[in-house]
Length: 104
Image (cartoon, rainbow, N blue to C red):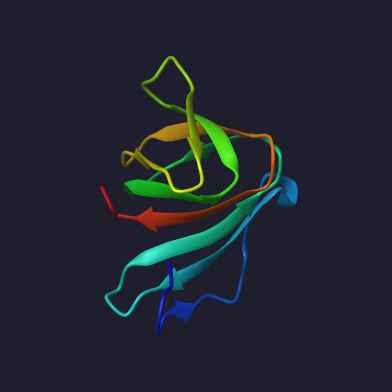
């Protein structure tokens, strides 16, 4: 996946003590995305807008707000998170991802 002619926000988004970092990009169509990396750990994130998390490297387990069970994802797969919700993610190895905002 390549993104062309994008605006890149210089300031990094840093979460969970630096174990999750990302950079925001804005496409020519005005879509916001983040390109990020998660180090091993278990994290909880809240959403305001709907998101699609695309795993580009590594694997993870995810539990969405309304789910009782964890679901496994690996490179090439994605999952959707509704607006005004949250999810937990468990990472055992370096995870590279793209988050697409407002993509529900």
